[in-house]
Image (tube, rainbow, N blue to C red):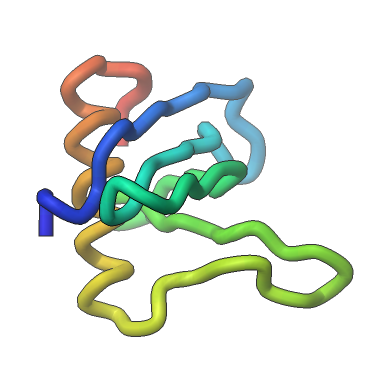
Length: 86
């Protein structure tokens, strides 16, 4: 899955209720996704929350496999730069 996800950019924020950052990335080298919220999970790891506008989903992974792959790539980037502990 790593071929599909590139240019992962993490923007840390002051943590609040588990929300620790925003992330942007490029899918398939053609689609830019931004304003994805990064939350820490109680048992470790992260959870991504995709943008919504007036209760309508703007974008989201269509299945768990792809969503998990995106989360894994974001987590690798977070751990690589030690932006915060998860």
